[in-house]
Length: 91
Image (cartoon, rainbow, N blue to C red; front, side, top):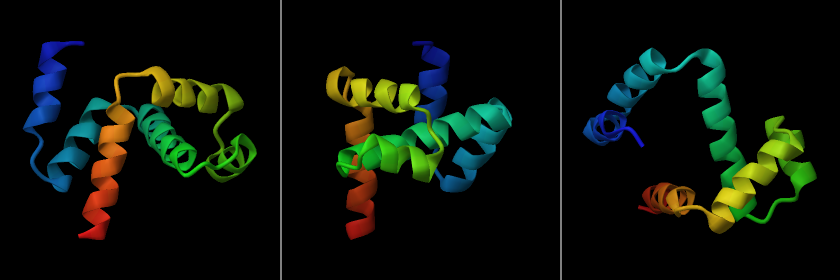
């Protein structure tokens, strides 16, 4: 992955900075797709069915399958971030 992008993401320090960066970096469609994939990953981790996920998020079965594959065989990024988000809510 592009070192500049990784370094830029690592530099984000606040939600306000994250919002400004993502709004500038991504189109509305790209932001929607990213948000949808994260919601799909969260629901998959909660053992929701494809139908439940599709109904709640509007994601296609192809998108849900792609996210599920990343959860099962990817680099662990979804798990790391979702676990941290869940931990932050429990503090």
